[in-house]
Length: 518
Image (tube, rainbow, N blue to C red):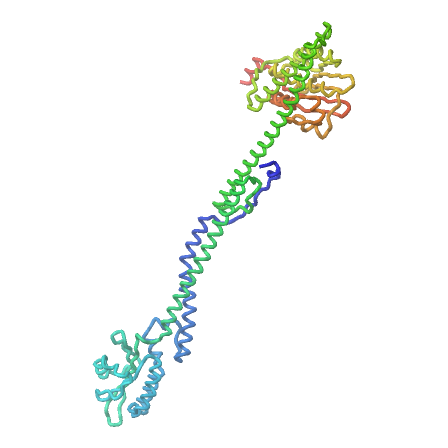
């Protein structure tokens, strides 16, 4: 995974408001229960009414809608009502026609379309049978009904198979007769059977459609986000940490996706940090290789000069040896700096804090530095405008490292002009400020915010020639901040640089003040 694969720009996924999964499941459960009821109640009634209209049209009857089916006797009476009315009319106005076979055949023909047939009895004898012999099973019942009073259109259920309607008449010879309309209940109305089957099909189809819609709804709310999550995990496995889950819902899957996004961001940040750390380590190794090679080459050259007898005078010998010593000291400082850098990385800097008098401490530092700088033609100045009794809490050794690193860094970039370094102390209220200024080449304004970062070089080629690991100022900032202070830089190209530090003053609380506070 390269640095080009990981972008610095972060994108926050949009949070999409959706129903919780348990709410969806509850709604789906209710819908699965209610839908068949609604289909049976609503769709069934509509379909039944449609079928009843067809039945009314086919049989030329006038029903009261689906309510008619709740009273089978009423419905079957209506089914043969026209035929029965005709028989009643004949019995009252022309009873002789009820003995006319042609008339009876015509009536029976119409009844056959309604799963019914006509039987006429006279003097307890059947004179007409439209059933083709089917009356043999109910003959005794017909004889019994013939002795009863006229039913006037009401019917009797016989054995659950027949509905019988009766009308009596008086023939011309004074004999009593009865006409019976017998309806086969078990064979009647195939439309009713088809209607019930149709209603069942409508209900089943509605349930199937509801189940499919509910399944699709649940599938979309659960499996689609899981599919996106699966793709995101695949992208991360392939090293693409920029792949973001967009349109995250606020249900349970959405919470999982948010946790996944947090994990991805954390992995992304860790990957960026690792890339930066690896890059810094490569730079550090490169700088160390160069910085160690330079003094080793010089030492090797001067030692060869001594071995070859080039240093043939005490003065040359002394200069060669001093140069070798200085180069060895440069290597020692570099190794010490790297050792300290490793302690910074592990956050294990050994501090030994104590009360430090600012005036005495910095005056001593300037006296030591002035000797070494004077040998290199660099002047040193010290001034203090603050109270000489100001004390801070600091580690003297680590504070000395701060001063040496800043001064050492200044001497590298003084240029060809005569170098000058000054240390100035001033009072800043609750703080004491220390300014270390030089008259070197200065630092460009665009580089000032970054000079305290590890391995940052304002001019890589120039700094490579000057030497240094590139971690000196980062060490300075770390030590100052660990002391509770702050450091920043002021610079102007061609005029020089000033490093400014502030440390909080230490003030002892007197015994009487402690008593008052308590």
